[in-house]
Image (cartoon, rainbow, N blue to C red; front, side, top):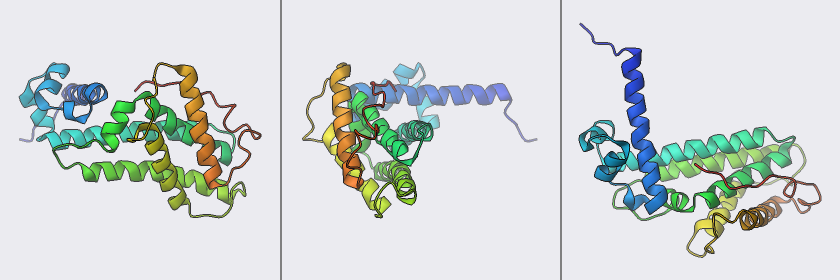
Length: 222
């Protein structure tokens, strides 16, 4: 006889898995990836450590899935913002703004996902995360090129360069210690890096075209 899980059992298992990931995300947002340890995460999620291991057999697998989840959420936000824009150029601007806002409003989490040194191998998950975001930005650059709004260029190379510049400027070792609660300063920084990114791909008149100043830029929460 084959045991089949009921709908309620499946929902309960999914809810427990989500609670574990949410606890891991909170830990990373507060203390970086080194704070993502099995016992503290279990305590946050109100489950036993053995339960965490049942869903994620190792810390590496837990962190890898956390990175994947954060990436999926950011990708969904980028697509939603870009798809709501009225044209290819404004879609690209909206995508860049979304990356910048998410990065600034969750700096510790962003750094932990991107580059914080950890004692387990999560390079594959990090690479997949970056490729997904870069691919979305590249598609927006390509759309703007096809529409004649940008000069012909290598969209993949441009997207990779833009993301590298954004991350370095906002959370890299040389980044200023921006105050997340300062909405005005956040807006200024987001607009500055967005203008820089748009100029890099060939939009020299972003302000005149309303691609930046007309965007609503406010910090977001995870």
